[in-house]
Length: 395
Image 1 (spheres, rainbow, N blue to C red):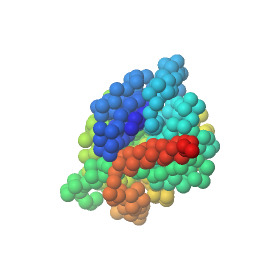
Image 2 (cartoon, rainbow, N blue to C red; image 1 turned 45 degrees about the horizontal axis):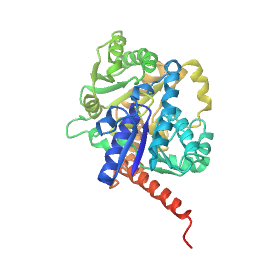
Image 3 (cartoon, rainbow, N blue to C red; image 1 turned 135 degrees about the vertical axis):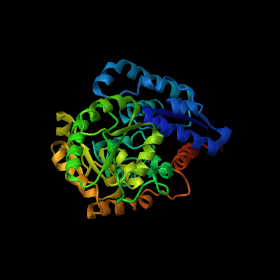
């Protein structure tokens, strides 16, 4: 079986590497894994058609500057798929790149099944994409439990919830004995997560600092602040934190971040996947976000009841969110103060977070990567059986 995988950014590269391991465990030497990936997929044995850095750019200005290279690479994938004739193509996340590629592949090879790993956010933004996808995507493998229903409602392709990769790391997120001290013990451990993009850090760090300054004057107990920082933003975060009334502890690296999660009593976080990580770790939080003026106007087109991923998965707005004009120290500080004690607000979040394991099927006997691998293989078998049924018989 020859499987062609296309990752478009580093997060997809990590998913692709896990999928490659699961496919190899399932099929052994009977599988050939080719396509486009980054460092993680290369470590799993893929010889990428070109470096992932050629296409893995973010920000409109960066994309425009690299557009000729991105287009050239997109067409090279289509040509490579046509030349190598795989049994299936798996596109992984990065829909602005991978879906135009998938459409071109489908036009060239209409009988080749294309599986989409990580659904575009059709449930929140541009819902018409779901019906369009049905024309070239054979199956969607979703990370969120509510996504299959969304695709069904919007007329999208068949969609199966395989599970979020965080499920495979729950053991690293959950505190061990004596890691998270009782809430009443000092100091109170507060996590601050200003985002993983430069624009998020630029827009939130000052507001977060002023929020903590208010908290410092209003709370009746000492607290310690830890900021887990991605390496390429750590220096900027340190510089911006110099104006804060106290020195936060800034840690880098995944292991230090996970340790901070296991110790934390509460968090102030930018909106993003990190809210689901905090929820799975059992850390009550306040979420804030601020975008550019143009993006702020576009938010009225977003069709979701919350921007907090944890709220969407739980199906209830238990985590308070403060967006745009509401993202102020005057509003954030009281919300944090309510979580710093054994309050109804804190207990409501903890109770809701306790339901996540069942909602996300965390105790399933197979991992998300294993379920994804099984679906990819099943899609190949379905395509082969369909092709066989259409072959003429002798006599």
